Amino acid sequence: MSSIAFIGLGNMGGPMAANLVKAGHQVTGFDLSEASCAEAKAAGVAIAASAAGAVAGADAIVTMLPAGKHVRAVWAEIVPAAKAGAVLIDSSTIDVESARAVHALASAAGLKPVDAPVSGGTGGAKGATLTFMVGGGDDAFALAKPILEAMGKRIVHCGGAGAGQAAKICNNMILGISMIAVGEGFALAEKLGLSHQALFDVASTSSGQCWSLTTYCPVPGPVPTSPANNGYKPGFAAELMLKDLNLSQEAAKAAGAATPLGSAAAELYARFAEAGHAGVDFSGIIEMLRKG
Image (cartoon, rainbow, N blue to C red; front, side, top):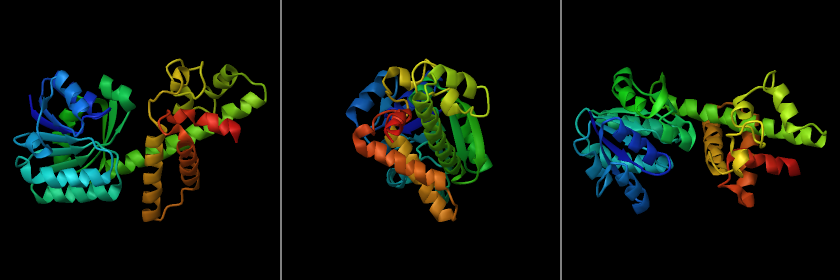
């Protein structure tokens, strides 16, 4: 059993902290939301009065926060309060520059930092089936891995500081692009008189096959568990996809990489969100694509 601090107990962090409790760890959490704290407390998480208070004496610290600026601010608070040699795990999805900055901050204080963003959404968080993409040194990864295994089913060490964020950003750029492609395919099929099932049966077993089609099909019917069968209730909200696509474009600009489809996908998701659909599952963009 380890003593673990968990900062950020929202839709993702709350279930992740609960799974650490289920795995037998002693978990102390903190969140600015009283409702999130109450829900986490009901799951067995002790609630601290502050982030710094939560991390005092903890062997491991996990943060799950909205953006790079929040991670920078919270780590600036908790690093001085952390136990010597503690492993710090940031599972937020943030920009690579911020990830590397907090790595440097923690390392300078003698702590063991990793960036470990996740894939799998709220379902994966609740079911402890997340994929973690991890960046950091070998020694820090070795300390973090048993903690991550209580919250996920696949743990991938992607490289040094910031490599986990880089992998997450690239993966979700691919996902955003592929969902638009699948949506356009079904929208065209509808106008050509082809049924959803017919296109699915062909594309899912031939060269059009991809996760956006076979696991998260954007039309109701072929994949009963996809959000399309539940009014596009997220899942993974369009605003979160837009966040990740914007991060990919910031990274591409900084690296001098050409990502024309990533740029186009970001523009389309921005239009979708601005039209009032930010909270809709990202696969719901097919409804905008149908209109042109």
